[in-house]
Image 1 (cartoon, helix red, strand yellow):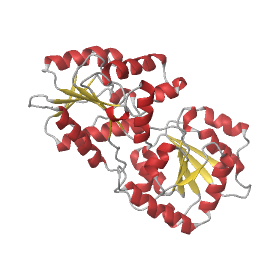
Image 2 (cartoon, rainbow, N blue to C red):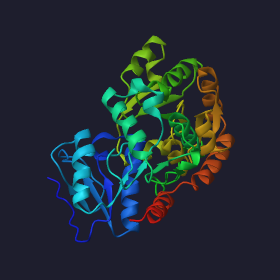
Image 3 (cartoon, rainbow, N blue to C red):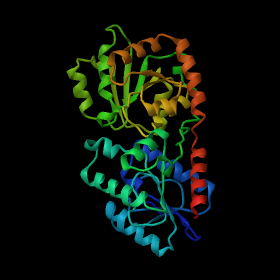
Image 4 (cartoon, rainbow, N blue to C red):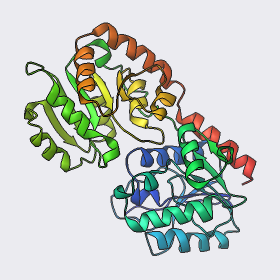
Length: 363
């Protein structure tokens, strides 16, 4: 059983720990890294969570479990009630949802995915998200933070506000910075890596169709990691993609993910919509070339350091994979450009940016 870390100081900055239950992927990494880095930077951080099931790995920071519920009732009722009893400390919400009725908080809104892709989210979550943004995060005196200028523009347009009302603090992407250089940058291997996540906006059908468009003699394989969308295998069968060309790995540990990045010719990032997109920059920190869909946020985050393809053009993606697999000079150039680009995004810089917001707000 997990035991709460002890703390013996007045609580002045509390982090909403509901992300430990209902976030995953980049959102989970963002919340965890921000929590840990802020705790190192400041001496007054307390992570507060609902009751957690056994086996949930929490950040190594001072922590307290409160309440009886785990869902919206915990976040919207139990958490604000507990905060009031503590003298109204500043609340940080790193994972999209925030209490509607609490008055001192800074909240991260990564993107407008629940509005842009409603089929990917449960009705209750969409309702809570819209209420939390409109009547909580955008209330006078609250502070709203997002993770890219592209997301800033989308949020402002969605809710009819001026973009400058939303702060932008980029996330870090140096989680794997200590992993040895990528063999992909040296031209070894024929595997490409992609995240096999659920949702039409992830655009993975285009990747599967690109695999089917590769020449019959091609030795290229595409490895899918993460929480795999079960519909992907069926689509591959419908497209008559040779089974040897697709490897379904599923969820992997951070250590295994680092190894997968490291052993890839390139990382494929086909997404149609993101708030930022951590995986391609994580790949770049290891010198792995990136093939990315040509979208505004990818252009903002990756600049000239990636090879872009029209997002829905499977033939163009297949051609790019074939060219990169056979061109060590191009891989080396993309590797160097990617490493340089990735230097802009560190978790220490993210924590520093959030700490400035905390100081401006007053903890």
